[in-house]
Image (cartoon, rainbow, N blue to C red; front, side, top):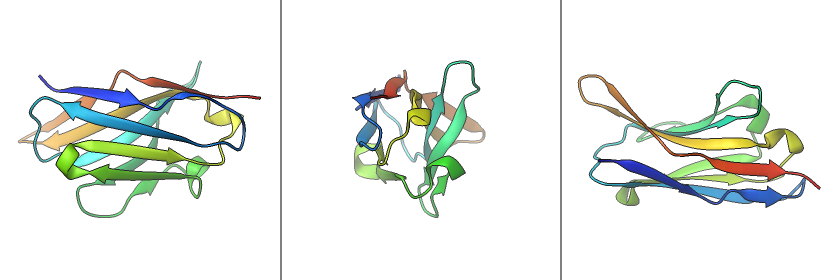
Length: 118
């Protein structure tokens, strides 16, 4: 059974940085797309950034120039470097792995809280 384990969330002051990590445990091969989503209280879950196995990364307009997504295929791990954090970045962040095998299979992390506050 595949599980995604996230780490790196926490409390940070505005302007600060955090680095999120998400690693897959269990047997999972050829992850086609890795991504990070977030959900703030009272709001819908939204895509923050995604990175395919090959090709261009994709970012929400609100985080462009501040966040960087990267992946290590050998370790089945995705990272999200978050710089210049703002209070509006406060949310629970979820990682997502997508694999195509006749149909799309989605795997989700448990979520990690990021709070940006002075």
